[in-house]
Image (tube, rainbow, N blue to C red; front, side, top):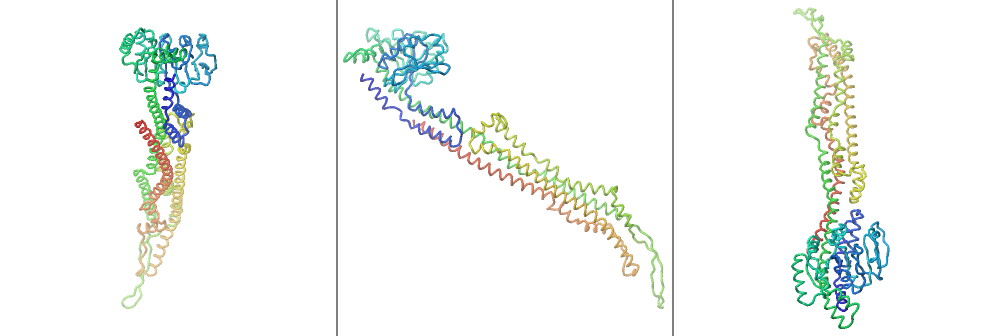
Length: 616
């Protein structure tokens, strides 16, 4: 028939030459550049590409004995489908193009086989229960453009049939409901249409079959009017046809008779609905659905990267704050250093007092020769108290281990060695901070569980490598703290050991010097008391001698003044932490910059797809 051939030609000309293919490929390329795509997502891309040029899918549905098989044969222009296919099989039959006429059976266990077409009329109920669906292939040109789905319909006795039909209605591009024109509008039919078809009005056509049974045009108009009232709001269009006459025109008649039967059948109105309504709608719906799916995939991977990106920012903040010491703790450390100096000063004062207390005042007799007015020499004898120092006894006392002062000195040495230990213990462990960060990021797929590696592999490659090695940040800080503790231990022990050694020598040196000064002063006084007074040491003299012998100013500088050991140690800690932080912050910021570039690319691509949607 020329009308059918014209329809096929027009349909082919309007075939969707889809620029969406470029969008699909560009989206897949963008995501594949940075992510290892899920197998399901790769399958989605393949499916989208395959569906771009897929035939229009039209479901033909109706109640039993509505003439669906004849209607489908009329559309195909050949007697291909046996009468009674639906009542016998109650299975979906997909009718598509094939080089040869054949039937393929798909079973519920996933297997499939080929069978003669007659099986549709002879299906055994036991075997039929194992079948999932049929595919019928026929060498009909129309099927290159349209795939028909002959559905089991809505059966209140079989919920599986109803569920399958509903699933098909959601997916197909068009729906054709076939009803008998002289039996239209029954309550059972209206209930089915209201519950299942009305949701898809925009793509639904109602075909009132067997109009050839009506007597005249008046009956036809009455039937159409009644159907439109009964099915109001359910179908986009309602038309009356004669599938029998359309099939007769194609298979049994010739010449003018065939033309008359075909025109009277009104089957061309079905093709016109498909061409002018379903085809453009399919094109638009396919475009929107494809772009919607692509945006969904992009957003999926955007979130997959955006969430770790947020946590990288948080980790960046943790690193930045970790290198900054608590001012209260710093002041406590400085105070501790100054207290050590106070203890040293106190010990020296006590030592000064003890040495001074050991000085003895002893009366000694001295002679003094004078000349009188007559030039005669006169020697006078007199007594005077002088300081003496029991050197051996004092040294013995000061060096004895049971001397309380010796014990106090040892406490000072130990306190210097322990300086900063508590401070280092109070520095929070970065391992705990990193563990807390990881728990927040990984949540349901923590490190060490079966879900960890799949999660890591779902991230971009640069984040995969970093996350697998992220625990090394804690190792870097632990190593840095270990070096700081070693450095502190070395400096404090060296200082304590130097003070201990200096202190022992200084005590002996001061005692000897004090004894020497007393002796020399006495000797000089005995020679010439008018010129050389006796040496009478004061506590201040002794303390000055101790300060010099010990190197008091050195310890004052190390423990008390501006550049004391506490401030120097704080600078060392801050410098060490800053070095470690800066190294890892540089890595983090590089990761973030890479992330931002990927996220920006995805956002721009989403915007492009939105623009394409508006254009379409």
